[in-house]
Image 1 (tube, helix red, strand yellow):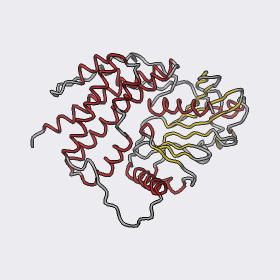
Image 2 (cartoon, helix red, strand yellow; image 1 turned 180 degrees about the vertical axis):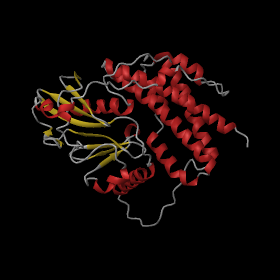
Image 3 (cartoon, helix red, strand yellow; image 1 turned 90 degrees about the vertical axis):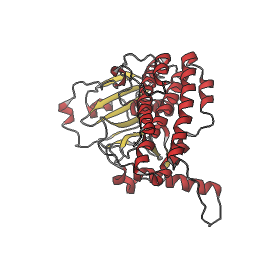
Image 4 (tube, one colour; image 1 turned 60 degrees about the vertical axis):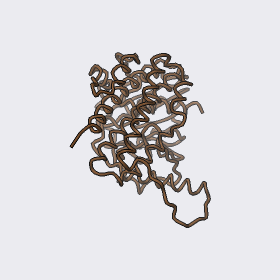
Length: 359
């Protein structure tokens, strides 16, 4: 169903960019040579790129329809759910028919009626439904006539053409946006996006929940009848293993920058750099190893994890840019590539300081 792809693209733009999908971006052209020149210096002489490239484009601010908002309930909900709550508070209310993955550094809990997206810190920051009859607690649902939207929510903050005949409506409230997709005069999907940065950071419970889910799925798939405990080999438990992981990813990163410098549109070469790496498995291994780390190595492990994630972001956003024919998506991807490169550069500098530090 084409709508599934569309809303997935908006989720990528809205969640990962931390800004509206239709924002314009300044200075979004990737300059691989400039990034490569600063990043590949292993002598700890890193200098961040211009500060303006690290600022996410600001949220479009327009007048709210205060008269209409006064008629709305204090909390808008999508099928009883609202963004901004920690995983620990809602874990007991999760539907039973869930499929879970950790794509794009978010945990997606997919049910028949709606999808829930949690940050790595365990905060619900995006909800979306495209199931007919499901929607907001103000009698606005998927399948309703498009004219009903502004009758219920008031004058939209933004209304614009998205792609393939779809329209996107955005309504801004104090700490979240409501995003509604329509096509052929009919509501096709409704989303709620947390605005601003989460103030809660509780990664352990959602990480453990996901790990247990993966273990259960693997056990169901293997259908093993063995009750004997299996001795698991845990990677990245020592400082030496962590440094080796960083070195491996730094070498891959250098190769990635070389490809981007020569021909950033060569998706085949970009893919080949990471063809033998399962990023999700690396992150899972780092989580399992965390109980073995000394207090000193915990900080190093966190920085190495951030570096790995930044490299992954560059890879993923470059593939999005290469595979999209939408100028808006390509522009957003170019901005994210540059921003991720700056993060990788700064994080790697901190890693080198810790590695070379003599107590």
